[in-house]
Structures are given as C-alpha cells and as structure tokens.
Length: 226
Image (tube, rainbow, N blue to C red; front, top):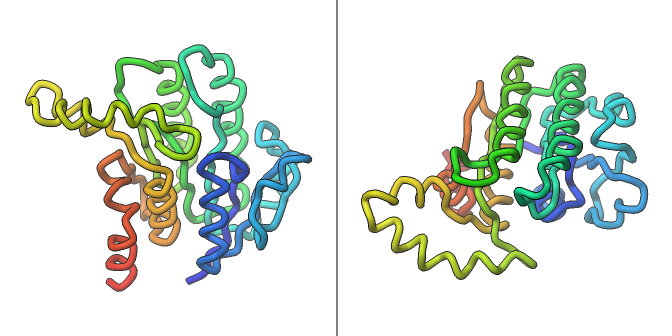
C-alpha cells in the first residue's frame, strides 16, 4: 500500500537514495530541504522548505503523513564533531518528535547508531537521547542502528573487511565484530524501506546484522508476499 512519508535528511548520503527508491515504489514523499539544497532531491519528491533545527518552519506541513523518517545528522561523523552532534543531530530530533506527535503520525523511523562502541561516545550519547525522546513521546518507532555505512565516497573502511572477518572467527572478538559490522548504503536503503512498509507496533531496533538481512531484496519480497 502506498504510504504518505515525511522525510528529513532527504538530501543526504542515505536520504537522497532512499527518497528516489520510495518514489519509484509509488509512495508519496515530502522531503524537508533548506533553500538551495532541494536540487538534491529526486523528481517526484515534493519539497518542503524549512530548517530541521526549527520545527516551526515545517511542523504544519507534516500532516497528513503516516510515517515520519528522520535521517538528519552531521556528515562523516568523527570524535572532533561533538559540538555539531549537539547543535544538529540532537537539536533536530528534539524538534522532530513534537512535530510528529502533533501530526499524529503512526510510525517514526529514526537513524540511530550501533552501541556500545569503543569510540564516538558523544555521537552514541546523542543518538541514545534521540531514541529516549521518541519513546517518551509514546510514538511507535523503528530505530535503524548501523555502525559505519559503505558507499560512494566512503570506501576507506573496505580495508577493514578482512579484519572484521578474522575478528568474527575469534571468540573474544566475535560479538563485537558482528554487532559493529559494516553495512552498505544499499542495505541501509533496503532496511529503511522494509521498516517503512512494515510499520512497528511498538518499539523495535535493527542492528547491523538485521540491516543486512532486511536490506536484501529477497527478504523484502518474501515479507511482502507473506
């Protein structure tokens, strides 16, 4: 069934690919964009001009969405960007949650992060706070928790793939290597589509192994057929 989706972060690395695929699948997508960045959105995607850090610029236009997808975040996160995590990532989710509640959306999809992990503590803390805000608001939600997403312009972690393979073979490091495994942008888009088309009836989280599984076309097709 086609869904009515309000998307924040639709001009980004994952969001632009997701928006294009959702439109292709027949969903109505309205994406929040700052002036000057709307050309990054695909044809067929309706543009809502506004600022993700200030819901007064877009809250009135969330209705009649049944799904709110929040992908806003600092590009290329690193430990040096702790202040930006607060001013962009945390501020945007603080604004998005009441906007979604006010619009009475049925399902909130939030891009979070895998944890615990030995680095990026500030980033993990901000995303955990985002999850808490969503749960405290009583929204039904899916938390997508990747660790690192491979894709165009993000190829350097490919050198880590053999190390991950070895770590999964060693009992002492197996759990961490699995929990913090790498995923691709295609797998992220596939898992987001699966979450959108199969809304949660409560709170659920997709960790890297779940993202890889949900992001496969075979999984999406079999679940849809079921």
